[in-house]
Length: 84
Image (tube, rainbow, N blue to C red):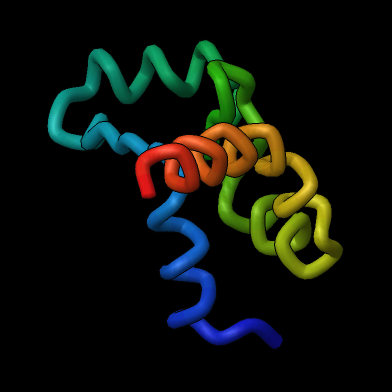
């Protein structure tokens, strides 16, 4: 199994954003309606709803999540090489 430290390094190369939608019921309900998924957290990649934590964990274990994120990491790796 991959350690958290190696995942953390890999994740730092990916442009991420997070939103706290739990403080206000309007955006929270809006996200539930948009994704048609009742629980949080929820993962979206390029605006596409991927799933909740159970689905993301299974995707990670199968390698599918890494594959799904390849195009995101390719751009940041190239930018990093260009700046060095």
